[in-house]
Length: 596
Image (cartoon, rainbow, N blue to C red; front, side, top):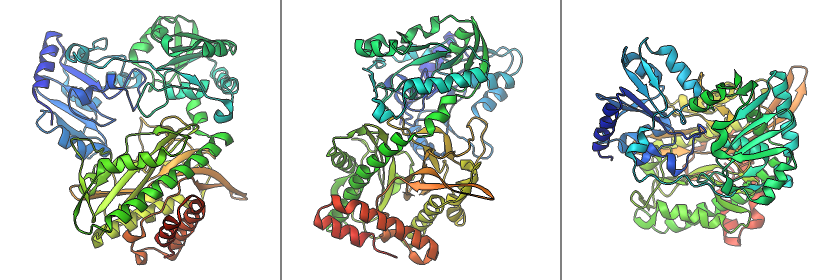
């Protein structure tokens, strides 16, 4: 719960600056989803801890717009703050742009920090607002209010070896330059750190859980400019990049760049302030970032590293399930001393046994019973439930390994659960298996396939308010586009054809507010299956292996084919992990993955 006096102080600043509406998104200078402490304004000032949201403040109202992942969480965190929750994409709920356009009148001023708001948003806002409404985007009111703001601290960057990256920077730049030539451009501006890290085979640690560095890049026909904090780059790396005709420039100097010709950029990824700076010398042409697609299509080295990491990750999760089952079966129907935070520490300790493991790929979600209904719940010292030998525990966790990124979710029954919970669990497993075993023609997007996962859940009259799956980086960000499984079309989210080599999660779920949440998540690799007279057929190869709790499944609700799919999956789990387990663990896993 956040103190409502925050809004009073903010409104006082707005009156002083003659601002009618002020907009604050959960983004940074690069339009990132996950940000460092310096940019967590909505968390530190207003109390909302989600990774996606926008607050709009006026003298009369204040609202937070966020998506279905955070509805339950946001209601709790905003209680007493004076901020109204706007549930994005729900019937009758206006978007941020629609809301402001309906309220703002001639003479009003809309303001925000233009360094953290994308060109695309501003363009769409301008198309909606009435004549006479002023937009000011060189105004950082947050800096005036947030006196104890954390520092923006850059960390050392390093080069990823080619035997891990799989392709050289020279090769990647050559492909990008072909794209620039086809678009008749002089240069391309890149602002997404994860794209820049991939392109230049560099990694950093400027954002927790994400091996990225604050950076910009401009790629020309014969050279490239890479903007990094000076203190983050050592002389060896500087020399290595120079030999590849890559000039290293200070991060903050991007706004001083002067050029001429046609500059290509992605208006959803470039801030309005940086766009304005670039307009001084260039003709601007909007494109979707070419390297996003290339980054998403993993090369054989990246695939191999991913497969190796998933074996280690799967063993860690399997051992966690074994330990929890063994420990809690001795404490039936009682509250133990075990907490959600203990579960977070346990999975971390299992992973730390591997030298290849570096750190988590996101904050582990260990959510017991009703806490699991909040899709992105994270236990903390002040919010950490004790776990009993009953009910459901959802564990969503992932790791950064040198060369790969993992993401896995398992929901386990810790004792007796209800018939309804079992029915819901079975529906989630059926949906996950349906999508995992899809066979489809090349040209399909994630939106064509999403229904395979949702159908068993929709048949119950239930839905989950998020996508079914997202791309995953190669030792990069755990959420990676542009590929995704989602049923809803969106102007702001690209819809791309699924390509062999893309990695994507398969994670349907059911979330019952105040009671429980269920999610099963595997990562899948898109592969070519066959070519026939009807076309080129693709499918998925499973990357994630860990047992699925048969104690929570009602086999009679599954078709014969679905049961066989699960049996085949579990046989693979046992065969794969058996050599790595102790005798008692092997016996348990054999029983736990028995055929149904």
